[in-house]
Image 1: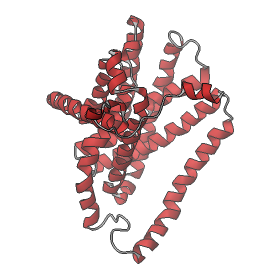
Image 2 (image 1 turned 60 degrees about the vertical axis):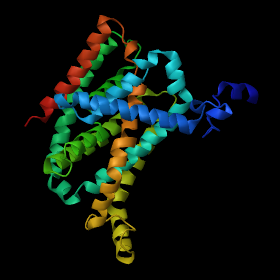
Image 3 (image 1 turned 120 degrees about the vertical axis):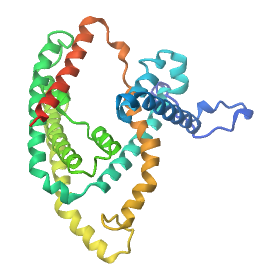
Image 4 (image 1 turned 30 degrees about the vertical axis):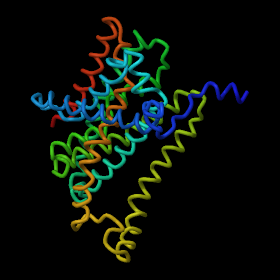
Length: 325
């Protein structure tokens, strides 16, 4: 049994090779292959960003499009290329680097945000968040009926309705942060209001998604979703009421640099040193990795393309109209 299970699992990749002159192919090893993938991602996304610059598109759009071009939708249709440059066993390493890039980027975003400004925009941000999720959520439910009548006839009713409502109403927090940071709007009142509204939007969307999972009943107890929700709420409460006093107590007894104070030159110097590395090298991997998992070629027929246009239009229309004062 152990041999049968082991034969079905792909062999793990070794880190480094002995070199071409010793008869090894560098692409059979994790580190050389990761370097090649990063170089391809950086070069292609920079070229696409240059081409899209006259259209005033942010770099994140170029990175998502680059991932689609590198993935099974375009270049990945050549199976030899896909198995050589982006084999399935290498995606774990790529996703790990991508998540690390996202983690450090969001850390830098939090470092640049001013909590006092967030408090000033709190009421407006909540109002914008409620409007920004309500109308798109209702439009998403309406769209789900069209999908169930055509290509998703076997979908379960209530979970599918909630899932489509969440999918069309959620705000991609990392994408929004990347766009605002690139436009130099992250530290402005407008940018911080948008980030606050997106945070509220995300919390509500994840709660609804947990509800959809609980209603689906796919072998999982509803108590699991409730437990995840309570843990998330407990984490937020802990970060608001318990962690800050501990940090303040530690900051008074530790030399400068143990923590990252908002005041003083340390935070600015840290952002200046790390931002280019994270935004220019590691963060594009996160958005490209999502494109690598997308296969546009699976959309066949006029009906499927029409439904795709309907979903995109509904999502954009709901967000734009809901955001108008």
